[in-house]
Image (cartoon, rainbow, N blue to C red; front, top):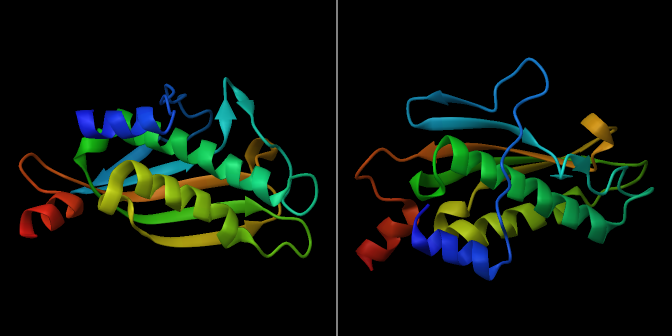
Length: 168
């Protein structure tokens, strides 16, 4: 990890965990050329789901945002392990799933916490297209799950943030 990203994580009080291996019949990430597709990550802390339940029922909007932040930290850990955060050209697409009770419609507010964190950590490379989807339930009774499609840099390529700096 490069020193700038490490410093941003430290300033944000984030220590990336070791990503657990998949529990079922899938892989953590797949690649196609310079695209890396990351499997969904939930808000697991020390093997336990943080903020279990559904938004609009047992989980508040603020707790849902905290769950999204934790799930995104776990996603960043998977990206670091698979690709290296310094090799992220851009987060192309983030999809956030929110376990939602009847009538809960603030899924975008929940997933904004994930989007904000990606921007804080990766700068311009963390800005992305996004979907925020309400679902009935998520694995392990998690309140939130996030997955991403990432443009991975090959050696010598500039990220969108580095490119913006180089041209200004």
